Image (cartoon, rainbow, N blue to C red; front, side, top):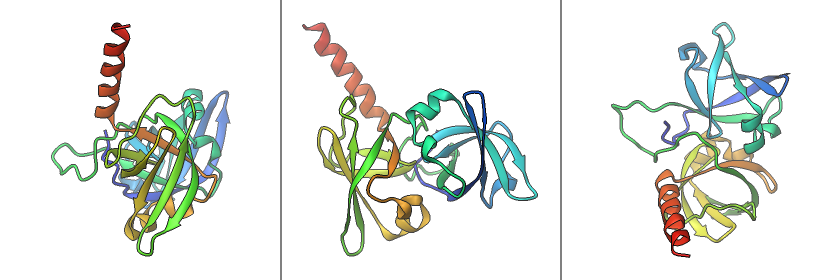
Amino acid sequence: MFTGIVEKTARVVKIETEQTNYHFTLEVDFAKELKIDQSMAHDGCCLTVVEINKDNNTYVVTAMKETMDKTNLGTWQEGTEVNVERSMLMDGRLDGHIVQGHVDTTAVCEKIIDEQGSWRYFFRLAADNAQITVPKGSISVNGVSLTVVDSEKEMFSVSIIPFTQQITNFHNLKIGSVVNVEFDVLGKYVQRLMDEYFNSRE
């Protein structure tokens, strides 16, 4: 479980394949603090630490085919900057919102507006996406806990303050960038219950 408050950005330093699995080696300054089998969010995708090299501040995570198919990990290259967050401490404050690290879908950045002090990013969801967004609702984009500003059937926008722009990989996004999206878990349950209710009345 995560909060969507990104701790750092890690850099992809090596990508290896083994059958349908991908092994990503990433570098981050707190690698020495990690433990084998620890869960970490990478651009909002929960991956397990399988190897640690404390000498050069690197660690390895493995993504299987299902993960590669459903996320933006297939766009990663050596040098890619990735938002990372360790799992939340249950005795701490929940500064963001509840993020599971289970990416629902990807979205494509369609427009970026400089609002003179903040930036608004517009994202297009796949046409067959079943989830919905609501204005002022919570959403996770590349693992960052954000609030929906504009909300349409296949599009939404979020606003980014300078601090978030600086410490996350949002400063690397451009038109056409693919991002991971996780919708609010409470909203997903409500939508599922409502769908089942209305389907049962047909």
